[in-house]
Amino acid sequence: MKQEWRFEKMIKKRVLAELEKCYSIAPLIYQNKFHILVAAEKKNRCILFDQDGNEKATVWEGPGGVMTMVQVPGTDGQFLATHKFYSPNDSREAKIIVATPDQNGRWKINTLVELPFVHRFDILTVGEENYLIACALKSGHEYKDDWSTPGKVYGAKLPKDLTGFNEENQLSLTVLKENMLKNHGYYRVIENGKVSGLVCSDNGVFRFWPPEQEGNPWRIDQLLDVPASDGTMIDLDGDGKMELLTLSPFHGDEISIYKNIDNEWKKVYEYPEKAEFLHAIWSGELGGKRTIIVGYRKGARRLLAFTWDENMQSYAFKTLDDDRGPANAYGYHNGENDVLIAANRETNEIAMYIFENGDL
Image 1 (cartoon, rainbow, N blue to C red):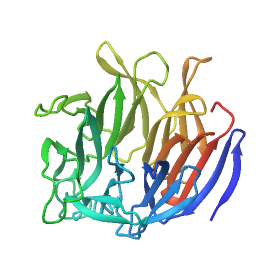
Image 2: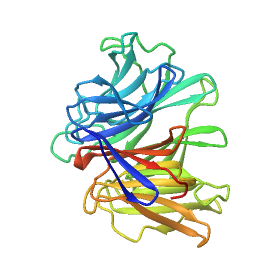
Image 3: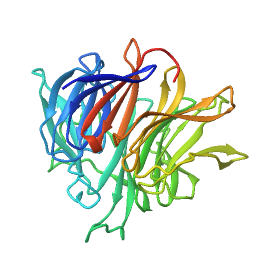
Image 4: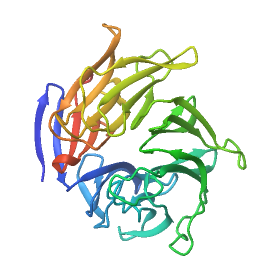
C-alpha cells in the first residue's frame, strides 16, 4: 500500500503501510544500513523499513503494546522494546524485551525485565557503559482511570550481553524517583556532549543524568513544577541555549516554549490554539532548520512544525498535515533528503514526509 501526493510546495508525503493503532517509531542500524522500526499499540505487528520507506521485514506479529523501542548501542540490529502496554487501563503485564536478529533475518525475543505499567525507557551511554532508564506511568491499577498510585523512574547498568535474560533471570532495577503522577513523557537530550533523560509528569519536568563514573548516583534536576505530558529540548533560536518545549497537561492541549532566564525556566511562547490530546514530539533539523515536531490525536489532529523565524525574530509554526492523529514522529536524513516518519495512530497510517527543497 503506497499512496503519494504533495500537499505543500516543498513536502511530499507517502503512505508506507497501514497498521492498526500504529504507535512507536525507532531508528535501527541493521546489516550496516539505516532502518526504521514502527510498531503497534494494540495487538499487531512490528515492521522494519529501509531508509527510503520500503518494507523489509516483520519483526514480530504480536503481542503489541509497544510504547518504546531503542537500539542497543554498538549492536547489529539488537533492540529493546516494551510489550503489553495496551493502555493506561491495560498495562499491568507490561515488560521490556530484547529483540536479537539471527543470520536468517528472524528476531529472537527474550524478556529483559517485567515492569508493570512501563511506558517509556531509554539507553543512555556514558563512556563505555550503557544505562537503562525506565519510566512507569503508574504503580498500581484497581479500576478504570485509576491514578491513585503514582509512577516511578527506574535505572540500571546494562551488561554487554543481554541474551541471557529471561523470565527466570531478569535485570535488577533501582528506583531513581518515586511519586511521579501520570509519568508519561520521556525524551533523550544531548547538550555539550553529555546525555540526559527528560521526564515529564504531573509533578513537573525533570532531567535525569546517568552516573559519570560507575558507582556514582544518578543526578536529578527539576526544571519545571507544572504538569507536563511530554517535552523536548533544542536550541531553536540559535542563541547557544536550549529551549524547552512542553505539551501539557497529561494528554493535554497546551504547547509552550520555555527559556532559562537568570537560572529560571520562564515561558516565552504559547501556541495560540488548543490542540486536543497532544502526543507526538520530536526535535532536530528538517528542511535546513532546527525544528520541533508536535502532533495531536483529537480535534483537528494536526502534525505541526515549530521553528524560529529570523526575519520576524519570533517562533513560528506550520501545519504539515491535517486530520491524521499522529502518536509519534521521527526525523532523519536519508542521504538525499530530510525525512519525517509519523505513526498516524488515529488513521492507522504510517506516513513518510519528504522535504526535498530546503527550508520549511
